[in-house]
Image 1: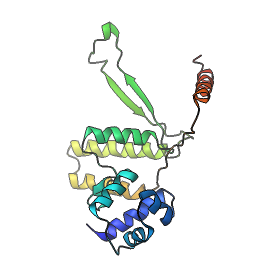
Image 2: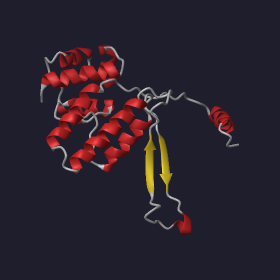
Image 3: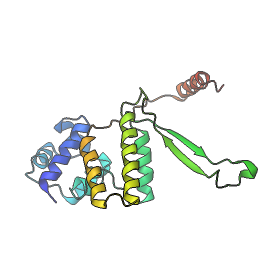
Length: 200
């Protein structure tokens, strides 16, 4: 475990959570002097402390310990579910989920009509500041993946292009906020929503 990497990643987590060192230490349940020593690289957190930090900050243990460049681990369908729900809660990125699972002819799937689901990101969506970036990233990934699978580029070149994107897109994402509402307030908001969208 590289103490410099751990200290840098702790500072990064604190910055994206917009907390002072004291607030971050309280959030993690760590004494502030210990947090200061971790951030300065003077001490390394124990494995139990690292696991606790990773769980509370929703990042992978491998990333926190410097063994991976990915904040989220993606090695199981459980990780995929967590990733999708986490993405849906980001303020700066918005998407529409389109599920096509109803077909003519008694719901029989054909070559033309296949069960599918799509995530649609609108690049000019004014309410989601990073949607244009998402569209550009996906376009670049599509081109690079095609080139890799058609043997136009090597895996090394593919990884190099990926790393350039990773270095370029560094702005942090923030969580959507939902107000605590009573049952009556939820019902009122629901009726307002249905009226506004001509569903009532």
